[in-house]
Length: 61
Image (tube, rainbow, N blue to C red; front, side, top):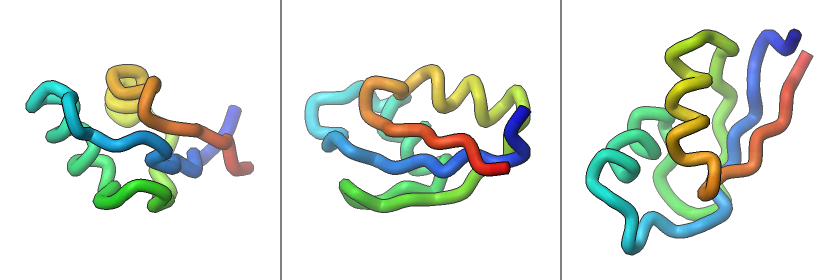
């Protein structure tokens, strides 16, 4: 199992619900094509699952 995930925002948040936009911000993503490293824990997995259509996720060991 990965210790971290590399998360990249590949689609715009235009047209998304307020909760989805808030989730993108909570993960630390600001603009399209920005990447962040997030820890692999249930809270982050839930956030990623909620906006998975906007992201690409790569496990990092």
